[in-house]
Image (tube, rainbow over all chains, first blue to last red; front, side, top):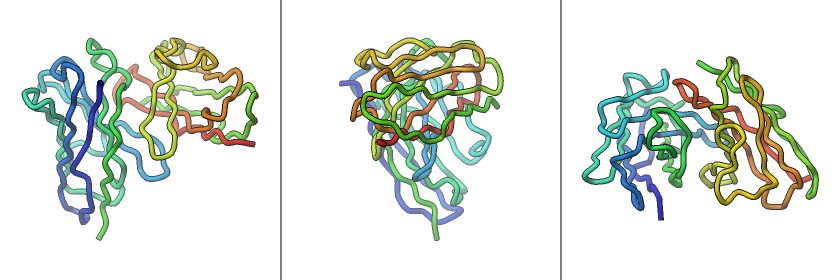
Length: 122
Length: 107
């Protein structure tokens, strides 16, 4: 079964840091672009960042540029999101998502993980 | 950034109804659009990609159309399991952006 599973969410104070992880299985992880997408509770979806198969090209939404870093370890079939200088508005479920088309640098997502909740609050 | 605007934001309908949701892009995106369905506490699930192609396993009562800036998602005969929130997403350029969602509720 093709799936991705996130972990690492939790409660963190404003200005703090957190690292999310995503473990992939059921497909050749190293051949796909991977993304993080977030959803504030009760709100809509926001794409956060993506990373190329070899890790050498990354893109971010402006609101996290300079604070968040996406990375991957293909040997471990894992995707990461290092989140620094967290703000209350970063509170959300964070989904790991695979690009559906391995050949596409920008595309749509399938599958998605179940999400991990990050809460930024004092 | 390309803004994606869905209408309506919410919709009440009955089982068996035909429902149409629209998505408008702030600039032309060709057919680089996908529709997702999201149920409470669940991850989004893709329904239609490249504006009009049905994802494998998705019932044929779902269909999509449009290109350029205007797109529609149609459910030909609503089933109880279709009550959910629907999102469009453009994949024409960075940043990847989503519509604000359309909540489909039971009348």
